[in-house]
Image (cartoon, rainbow over all chains, first blue to last red; front, top):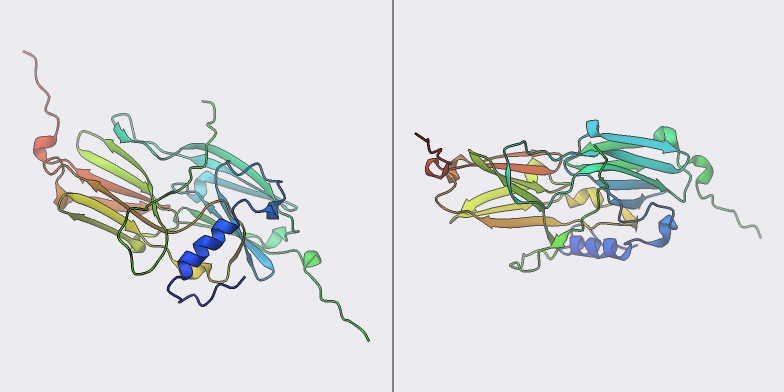
Length: 142
Length: 132
C-alpha cells in the first residue's frame, strides 16, 4: 500500500483514511470476540511480521495481563478510575472496569519472540511470524 | 463486586475547528471533570501522547489542551485490521474566572491520561456555616 513519503504534508490524513478503510476488515475472519469489546485493537503488517497496537489509557503494565497460545492472544486487565469519596462529578466520559479480550490471528506466530511494550496508554505488541509460516518464493524452471 | 463489561467508546471528531496548516483529523479526548473541596480536577484520555507532546494553556479564562502524536513510529506499518483511528487531540473548557486560581494549575501525565488540578480560588471554597 503506497503511503508516499512520510514527510508529505498530508501523510497523516492519508494514514487516517487508510485506517478507516481497514475498519473491521476481513483479515481477522470474524474470529475475534466482536469489535465492540474493549480494548480496541489495530493490527499492522511490518514487513512479514505483525504489530498490534491496543489503546488502554490509564492502564499501566501492572494492571494488565497478556497471554499467548498458538496464534491466540488474550489481553485482560482492569481499567481503574477512582476519584475518592468526596468528589462531585461535573462530567463523566471515561469508562472503567475489567476487560478480557481474546483474538485469534490468521497467521502462525512465534510465541517466544513476541514482545510487548506499554507506554502512554498504548500497548504495542510485536508479533513475529513463525518461520514455518513465512512465504517462500518458488523458483520457476524452464 | 461483579466485573463490569467495559465497552469501547469511539472517538468523537472535532469538526468545528480552525483549519490547521497540516490537514489531519482531530479528536476530542474523553474527559472526566470532578470537584473536591479544594480543586476542580480535569482528567483527559489521550492514549499515545506523552507529556512532551502535550500543550496546556489558559487564556482569557479558557483552558485549552492539545496533544500531538508521533507519526514517525507508524512509518513502516501497514494497517490490515483496525478498530480505532488515531489523530491529534484538542479540547477546551471555559473556566469561571472567579472560581479557579489560574496561576496555580498543575498538570501530570501518566499512561496517556492527563490530570489537571485547578485549585479553587479562596473565595470559591465552600464555607461551612456553624450552627449555634
